[in-house]
Each structure stands twice: as structure tokens, then as C-alpha cells.
Image 1 (cartoon, rainbow, N blue to C red):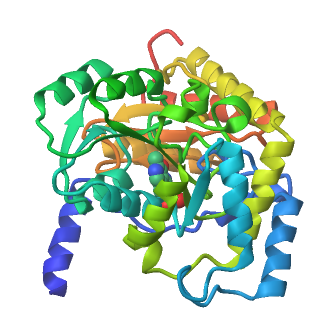
Image 2: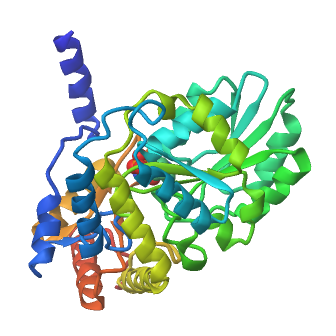
Image 3: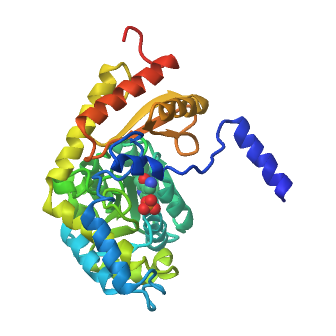
Length: 391
Ligand code: PMP
């Protein structure tokens, strides 16, 4: 078998799509000491993973309750920190209840797999995250893919698709690789015409968009019309794990039916405690989200002024699209040498021909750091001939 796998890996290499694991923690450690390299590739949007309160909460929980949960939630792993976090998440999202999963990925696959049965149809945005795609594959329902952020195409597909059971519409709230925001207000309006249930993945929306970082549904003022609000604890909430917020009956159903919830070990106490501490900071300091937005707008403007096509928007995910995978990799490597850490994103994460740098902003970045990052990205892009003429 190894020979077969070597051949397949060689094909990936030839296509410029081979990946290697590299340690990136040093960038953060260096940042602590106030020196370069500068991290612009993390999803730690509020800069809370290293906040003293988050570290202390994790350390205290580990000291009090141990390293691991030792069992699944439905057996022996359901330590008391869970109920507290779930109540706090539900209060934050304005829902009746919430349920924490081992990761955002697990929340998506388990929820879609549990909710959408054989008679049902899932309508899914073409650029939804891989965990949604995999959730659709696991669900027994048929999946119909609609054009990216296109409520008219969604409506046409709803009209054209017979369904004996329940219709579901699922979308990222903030798209992970483009940083654009789904028109959730229009989506819920279309959904209303067909009795469809809407699910929004706010992995990149939680702590980032909406009042106080309450997410995409809150941004559009339609929280009550989004039946399933998914999010993750692994990005702005500075820890790991995923969650679903919704009605009490939805949560009770998922406890009984979501396989990625039932058949896995509960998160470690330190992990849950860290997420609680980060959520408390977010609730107590809504200006964190405002600072993040200001930083995102600042860097987008600086990159645009330097002749790079990064589009508009206020989210902290800024794509610098370059096309070929090899070019994206070369650009990221060049920037790494200049002390800037950004991710090169290639297929299958993004469609063919749309490889890019994914530059992400944090509330903890200073204006000086962002100005330096923009200058370095522009210089590296210039060296590869990627900037618009005349800049
Ligand atoms: N949904 C989206 C849109 C994501 O970007 C991600 C992670 N990149 C996930 C779900 C999965 O979340 P987690 O990393 O917590 O598994």
C-alpha cells in the first residue's frame, strides 16, 4: 500500500498541493517578547488565547479537576463547567439552550447528520466550510448546492426541488476563506416561504460580527428566525470546541441523536474553563469586537492603497487572491522571511485557480504592526509582479 500512497503524494506534489505540518507557535511566543515574526494567520481574533484570565482559568480547572474528562458527556465526562458554559452561551446568543461539542467540525457533522433524514433536503451554499460539506454527506438527506450568497438562486432551487420532509438551509455566517458575510436576513425571508429551517455556522462570526460579537444572525436582527446557530470556541473564544445554540427541544434532540456528541470523550476541564473565561471577557468588554473591526478596516484599506485587490468588508479575514497554488506558497514563504506569518490557502480548501494568502487580523494588533504587515505584503507581492500597475 505504501507504494500506492507514495504515488498519490507525488501527484499532489506535482500539482503544488502537497502539505506539510510546520510548527507555528514560535510566532506567538516571539510576539509575547515584543519582537517579530508577526502573526497574521491566526483565528484568535480577539487575541484572548494568551490573556491572563484565560490562562489562569485553564490552569485552575486543570489543577482542580485534572487533565482529561475521562468519559463521554453521557457517561462520566460531564463536569459542572459544561452546564455553566452552555448557560452562558445560550444567554450570549439569546437562545433557550446551547450544547457544546468537541470541536466546531464535530458540531457541524453531528448536527446535520442528526437533523436531516432521508425525506429531507439540505440547501447548502457552494462555499460552505468542509465540515458542513461533510455533515451533508453524513446526513441521509439529499443536498442541493446553491450559488454563493445568492438568495435568488436559493429560492429558485427551493422552488424546483420536491421535498417530502423538512427543508434545511445551511450557510457559513462569515465565510472562512473570503471573509464575506452571508445575507442571512434575505436567506431567512426565502426560508420562510418554504417552511425551511435555517442553520448558520458562526465559527468566524462569534465574537466578530453583530452587536457585542453575537454573530451573524444578531447582525441582521434575525436571531429568532435562525433555528440552528452553530459556533466554535476555537477562534475568538480562545479555546477549542464547538457549540449549537437554539431551542431547548433542539438541544435535547441533539443530546440524543448527534453521534459526534454521543460517541466521543468530553472536552478537558481546562478547555471548557478557558472558553468560559474568554466569553466572560467578550461579554464584559464589547469594545474588543469594535477594536477588531477597526483593525480589519484599517488593514484592508492599507492593502488596497498598496494596490492589492482585497475587496471590501469589515471582517478580519482578508483574502489576497493570487490564482496559482505555487504563487501563493511562494508569497507566504517570502513574507515568512520578512517576519510576517500568513497562510497560503490552496485547493481543495478553495476552488482551483483561487489560491490566496489568507491574512487575518486580531484585536490585539497595533496600528504599527498592521501598517508594517501591509507594507511587507505589498513589497512581497511587488517582487512577484502581483500588484496593479502604477502603484
Ligand atoms: N466552520 C467553519 C466555517 C470553520 O472555518 C471551521 C474551522 N476552520 C469550522 C467550522 C470547524 O471548527 P473547529 O476548528 O472548531 O473544528
